[in-house]
Image (tube, rainbow, N blue to C red; front, side, top):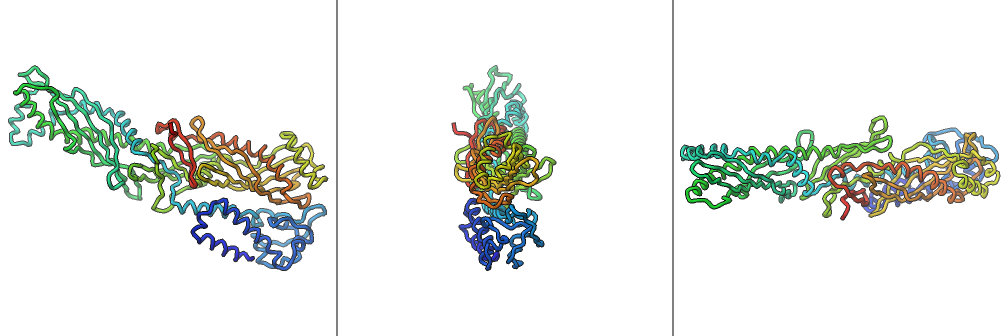
Length: 581
């Protein structure tokens, strides 16, 4: 089967709708099959695997020849180009006792499991196809209401109500009437008029019919009193008034969008002024006149005195929300920073759309996560006050940054003597001479080859890694006895501990093992499956879990006032919500 035919197969699959719905795990299986077919191609071109490997036994189709081996029948430039990215001259220089089918250097070969890279590309395309933002903070109107109420309290809205210039407002209102001079003469006889008590009721934040705006209602309760010279009785008036405003998204130049509060006013239907006590006929007539002047003056007072306070409180709330999203998340030597992109009001939910940037230890951006497309798939709250949704590729970047490390080098006999003994026994089954070479300074080197791949399902998560494992007989050897390429997977847990979002690998499994290089002859790497899993479990797993245990702070949620949170998984994201009581 030619490379062109393999490419056509892949294109047909990707063009079909259901191919996009395959999980990343299934795609790995697909590319394993395709690469196996590709590497078996020499057999279909008229020469045997023994000929291909210079007459010596060749390992499984996951192998490529060492640059020092000249195949007898490999004359097709197209076939040679399939295995090597650059042309090279091969000269035989293998020695007796060495396996002749070695992998070329990484610079001159197409890696046998490069399919993982292709799978990563497909996974990225699938994420883009959903048009989900990298991070979304979704807030209910209840959260908006509580935050705004606190900001109004911080601005001492009660004091503003108590300082309302009621008498001045009535005098201005009386000057507009026909009997302005007469009314003014009456008002001059009022010795004093002031607010004696005031309070703001529970705010209401409700969606409007268009689903893209929110109505804010702030009910105000005021008791005002006044006194005139001829009467010793203090006349008390009960004033009920409501300030209303609209929250909506405003887009300015350069597509910069933000939440704004506008159209702050009072509607006549929410205004009521009444007497608190019964009065004599004459005093009641005077009180009625005062009420008739106060009623039209109150909406103007709301707009001039209360609306600025309401707007100031809203701006403080908006600024706090923006600051919540700007707190960087430390990831060992790297850090993740969220970038506010735009707000979206969707009926009773306010979504803050966030991008993300991953910085290395030098402060340079290594990964950028943006929103793809104009139409977004936004999450629903499902009766929770808030929801923080982190897209899968962002979670992968966080995990990769936390566990990122160079090559792990371990003196196995010194650190894990029992594992060293088991390794010696396992190699003895393959080659007794090689097992005898393992000395007290035998070394194991482990290196993660690529960024981990995260496979999410409802309630479950797995991480797949490509790992290179090298075994050295002694610490003096510069060349390993053999090198294994391991497709490993782990179940991963997410939990909250001491205000940190913590990840943990439950176990690690060697799902597939490939013999990449060998100085002890060709052998079936499955013979080392148990000891390989043991080495990964004893060395790599605690090392990675130790780094993951540092966790990442969830200060965004904590600063919103939620102390107890829960985690859940969807097929495309990690979700943080309030824990159920």
